[in-house]
Structures are given as structure tokens and as C-alpha cells.
Length: 322
Image 1 (cartoon, one colour):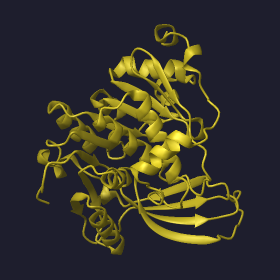
Image 2: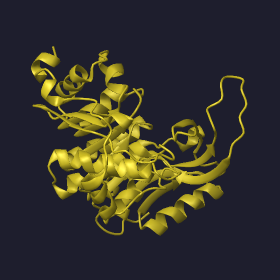
Image 3: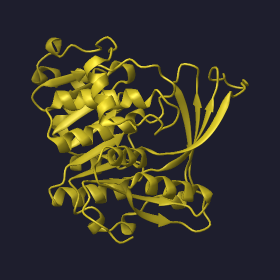
Image 4: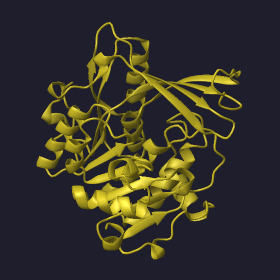
């Protein structure tokens, strides 16, 4: 696990082997449905984001944990093909993490995750040198103590920390103050702030934790963000959706890529939305990772979903946060 060269982006978090079952509809409780196709593909939030960033020309390093089964080799081979440097902890006599994903005829996915407890990444298993040479760090909240340790090291080194969070995991209050760019699923601000209106909950989160940016991804509703002074919004792009698995992972990768290009925030949000949309046009968490040219073409020529938010009509942040 020797670090080979300085990394632009380091990701600390999940990998998973996705078993994707295409179904005509999600069955009701006690129901039954026949799958039309089954695919077994590598996935996982942070692992997928690192593959996307590497595809777009960034140097990347993935830090995570695997079992010693055949699935572990699938992940290693996928990282090697993409060119992602890895710092992997292998657990003997252990299965790698799995996700079982039902994808309905409209492309919407329903996921069930499973992993052995020994796959939990521990702070003692991390090395500061894996983090310290990055220009950006991506973490998820699944292994909270390890994520908090990595984020604290990044903060000490002046490295921006981006978080991909979708649950109010135990220990999240210790992690959140270390996050610079908090990009979460749409339900999390409500759970953290007990406030259903994003125009109020996002400023509350930003004020509470002093993040540079807080944002909620809204699926076909796009993304709403708050930077401490004003709101920003980007609509989602229309594509023929095959599978929404990995959309959030690719959004985060797009945001990191944009951040390292020093693009204006609106351009960053549009790029991230376009990259995520294109990924949804192919089965699998990484199936639709497209080149920069294709993403830019969608931004220039693509049709968008209707706007879910008009930032000009949102109350001033100081009023919204009251």
C-alpha cells in the first residue's frame, strides 16, 4: 500500500458488488416478480466517484476495505483498468460488501445493502500519508469514525472535504464540522434540522457547521445549494433513464472535478447534473460514465426537467433560517 504519486483526489469510503435485477415493477410485500435481466457489477459510493474522476483525467486514490473473495478481485481489476491508485485493507475469510438492487421499468432503483461487521473501516487502519497530498477528499458517512479522522487530517492540511451523506448516521455531529462541501440527499436536511423546507434547512445547516456550501440533490428536481450568502439552483437534464444507481456518486465526482477546475458554482452544478444524468442512461453505478465532451454537449444542447426551485423567489437566507 505504498503511495505511488501525489493524488488530486482521495476517496475514503464504500465499495460494493452490485447485483442488479431488472424488474417490470417493484413487488408488493409478499409479492413475486420475474426479473428480466441480472447483472453483477462493481459499485459503491466513493469507489464509483473515484473511477469517474480518474476517467476525466484526475489522479485518484481510493482507500477502503475488501474481503478476500472473488468479488474483491473484481474491484481490484476495475480500479486497475481505470487507473485508480488503491490503498486497500483486506479482511481474511470475509465476503466483500454487496448490494442487491431492483431496477424497475422506469429506471428507478431500490437497494438493499449487506456487509460483514469486519468490513467496517477503522481509524487505526488509516494512514495520514494516504490523505495529506490530496487536493480534495471525498468521504461518505458509513464508517463514521474513520471518515471523521480522514476529514480532520484533510482540514489540518488545508484540503477541502466533500461529503456524500444520505443518512443521519451515529456520530454525524462530530463529522459535520469538518466538511467544506456538504452535498446530501434531499431528506437529510429535514432529519438533521427538523425542517422540511430546504430554503430553511440548508441555511440552518450552513450556519450551524460553517460549511462553504451545503446542497441537496433532488433527483429529477435537480440540485439546490446555499453558500452562506445566496441560493443556487440547477435543473436536472432529461435523458432516457435505464438505471438511477450511482447518480449521486457521479454527481459528487462531477462536483469535485469542477471544484478542481475552479469553475463558477453554477457551471459546477450544471456539469454535475449532466454527468449524473448521462450515467442514468446505462445500467450500473458506473455504466454511463461519459467523457467530458459528451457531458458538455448535454449541457449545451440537452433538454432539462422543469425547475423545482426559483432562487429569486426564496426568502433572504437570514429570514429563511429563523
